[in-house]
Length: 397
Ligand SMILES: Nc1ncnc2c1ncn2[C@@H]1O[C@H](COP(=O)(O)OP(=O)(O)OP(=O)(O)O)[C@@H](O)[C@H]1O
Ligand SMILES: C[C@@](O)(CCO)CC(=O)[O-]
Ligand SMILES: [Mg+2]
Image 1: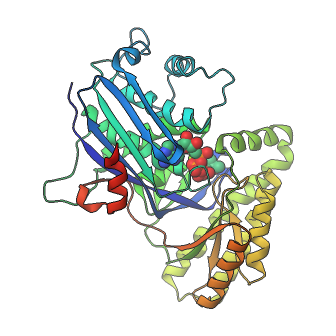
Image 2: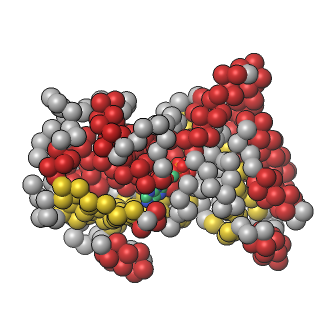
Image 3: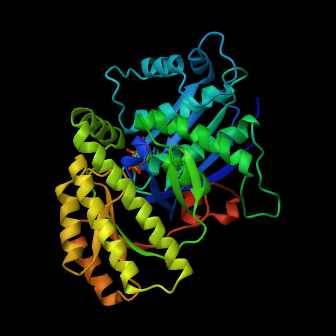
């Protein structure tokens, strides 16, 4: 069986407010970043499935015959993709010798790939192909690298299986899918996230799929079309952490202290809703310093709440202190426990202050850069629309 080649990309994200609380049915506000993950799928005739993941130093190949044996007996095409197929997950875990349920970086990435591949092709003939992925996002740092990866996998494999079309026309550089196809991509990406995260809310894959800025509540995605242009500084503390572990930690805390943690989650929900209201006001009325004062206070309140939830880290405290010394307000973004934080820059924040802050943070060993937010969700690309260095990496394998 020969499938179509394609190149796709999906963006990472920053959560303004609502991380962790969103897993427990509260509102989150998230924006996509101008940092993307790129995936190239190539049909081959080797009788093998190969995956090249240079960001995590993983290069693997399997014979189609070996993979065929992993497909559960009497396996039908899966229409309902809300839950993972427990039998397929068990077989994949056995195949990789995962015994304690904790997947390492490489296992998480390969398991989610093979899970989607086998789910989509399992009932029929397995195609021989090579998938290569390269990301501009730091892996496992709170910027939605797992979701961008899962969205790319879902889009490329759904196209290869013929479940959705490849939207790129001969004369296009980039192309997007229609709403219905995006919903399919999003729900298969969610499956990948379930393997990587354990219990994802779905907010990260929604941003990776639709891009822009959105409000997410209990699986419901509302794109926010009217948002002011925000200047944000992104800092990677480079402290490694796992979203799966942190999400489980918060759940344990809620189970242990329900009457203490429930009001904290409710308060985070109110922070997100207040932030959304202020952002909307900033597009309909002249922006004032008071708007920014409120946004800064909300950042501080939420950062304290995240510390109460147990997902802070001394490196994130350092980020908050260093930026506050320059009059700027920061909070962690994503799962916390290390990883990345965001700092709000006011329109009048002088470039001298920004450069000084970046220098202070770099002196602490952190990576730091000003970023633009918003932008497109998942896309198909012609090779011409991809930066040369990225294309070179994708073509190398
Ligand atoms: N470029 C990539 N290549 C291969 N695997 C990747 C890539 N990016 C992410 N992954 C997979 O995703 C995992 C990281 O996911 P994790 O959810 O812990 O962090 P994150 O998505 O970066 O942060 P957050 O979920 O807080 O936004 C990695 O261990 C790896 O399995
Ligand atoms: C921590 C979390 O809320 C956001 C991770 O980016 C997890 C999730 O929503 O799946
Ligand atoms: Mg993730």
